[in-house]
Length: 292
Length: 292
Image (cartoon, rainbow over all chains, first blue to last red; front, side, top):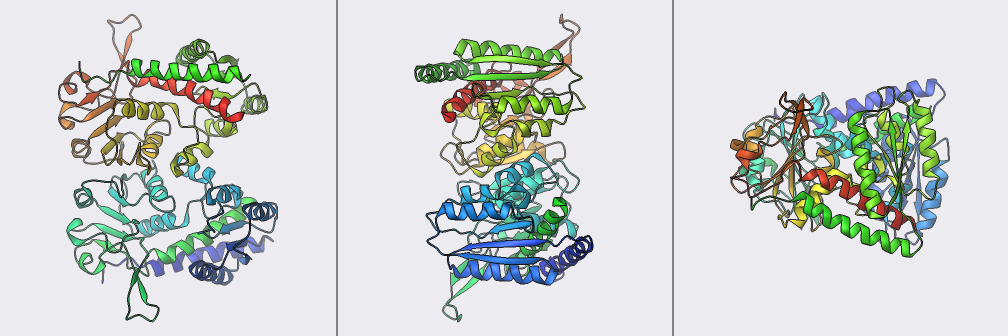
């Protein structure tokens, strides 16, 4: 298991850095505050927000969750966000997706003040990320993958990177981050997706493959060059009658067969997952810092 | 020359569509207005703005150019833009780059109202483009390349596209446009740049190569697969004592040796150049339409 990229360990390190920053801010009288907004009672959303709240508490970040009924209108939600935008004790606002179908996520994410957009989903932050503006908020999952690679000393400069998936939450911002003209980036990025051809040959050329395509064990051993670095962002639910819950979670990477040939590889769970929360907390401390 | 993509002809077609739209807007009492802001007396900027003004006039768009002294402060320029943002007779604002070195282009482009940002450089529009929002303003040159490809019936769905160059004006937004999950996109995009390795082998796999790297005749015949579609965005000045001006303009593509093996190819000049102006006029008519 010597080639594992230990997401838990790297996330802990980032949490420690964030806790230190929070302490410094507090010594200057600044108390970082994070508000979660959750609409309806989706069990996964409840669990995610719970985990994030707990971590915020551990790091000394004041967090609270506003739970709205699933019948809340879009306008009510926008008004609530407007209030949080103007509340100086709130430095970060996270509206947990998915939202009920009668609410347009795009409109809601655009309502969050870009300065409090710790999720990095506001178009201004998406645009600034693409334009190479280092001061923007980066979406937590791709920023977390970037930190994993950097802190594992995976060479990015000139590396051939294949990103599997072009979602707005992972694939696209991951491409934005890695293609920048910047010391920690400078990669040659190819984005593959459901309409791509020659997927295997693209993957076989890659020095780094980031799988965020949402398909269980999509990446197989015969698609991976020996020594390639593999990052598994996938979280897929597959039926499993032997499990108490009736399902289990698997990644986009056929880990057991790929690990022996990979240079480095993230476990899943224990790889990217912990990094998403770590970057959220990092962004929140940063938002508090920037606002003062 | 049967494989040429005739940028002039396609641009004329778009101009005709824009002129029709302008006429319709006028019949509803809406007079599209475009303001150019030019700082200093850069000869190339003066020429570009002159061409754009002339075309606006031909299409019935009311345009004017505000010329500021090169000593204008950033704040004075921002105040001027603020005034234009609030002027309801102005539907499009174009601040001609490059700006004098004491002015931060990023700040200036961010000042233009996203609703009047016909150049598509405001971070909100850059972000919305990346997020797949069809209602945003697309930067004129990559949008023009996209129209060239679409109107020449070049298949994009699943095509392997290589973009040479990762600039904010062409390379990056070109990638954003072509990688979208959309009927006129769905391409597999690889962005190459100065730090990329294996450039030749990347190019040899490409069904479409878009060269926007700013290096004279960078793309050679031995980098092109037979039948590939080649788009040359480059405008490079090279010394030429035999020319009256002492230089001539050449593209990023070694046209004469590549044309015989390419499936389709843009001439340069006469390919992408006319499309940039065509998309600017298109964006202006659209801005006027959206504002009313």
